[in-house]
Length: 342
Image 1 (tube, rainbow, N blue to C red):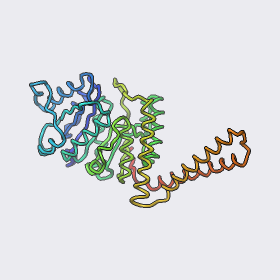
Image 2: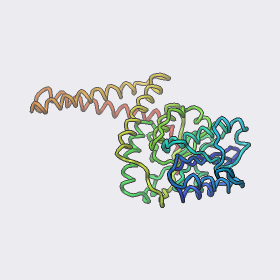
Image 3: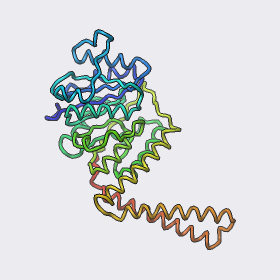
Image 4: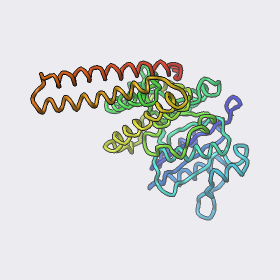
């Protein structure tokens, strides 16, 4: 328990042998439940999880095959929730689902256990367990329903490579636009914590299961009107290897953010309330596409100075102004949705 709140930590792991065991061992003692989820690794990750789970639980693995009996979230709820059972719950996927799928599985167990605050700590050792309290505090004091690490605040970005920093900044700005959390940075940071109310409100079955899960979740949280906390913390890079395939990751995540962005505008500014910024976004995009088509046609006719070409340029300029105004209104509407914790 942390300040009278039950706490769980989800540890997603894929091919993290040699790292995940230490993560399990170093999670603070006040954590009530640890869901160590092996996403069908091909190395010794599962056996390492089982060994360290048995050590921390003060028990032995199943003597038949050295593995604990698998349980479903429904079984966990039937056992009586967080007050019963072992501290570490080893879970193994039957097939690889991606880091988002592993986190989703842990979230489902946490909901079944009635956990007040559920954090995520990757199995690669990138996340300092001493910083867990920094994420829990904004939630237990009611400041926010979701807290995430931010490696880009102040001088914390100095430990990131130039390539990783460039990619992170690019995704940060794309996610700002899609989610509406304009004051938020470092959306790729997987060190997070979420309240029971927020976890219960979102549709876990509809979450993006690959890398980009956190980006998807942020847009969904804003759609439901939840406040988030951006908590400054240093980056930790060691022996871990990235499993991200950038050729598929970037276009897939961009398409996902676009879909979630459109849904957020529809739910927040058309369905539950009305604000003209949703229409401004639509008019700006439509006008920009028409203008670009007109400019392309003018170039092909080698008639850049014609009235048709100039009309398209003016339309493009007005469309850009319209989109910028829509962003300004969107930022104002979400100004109080992000709490920065330096």
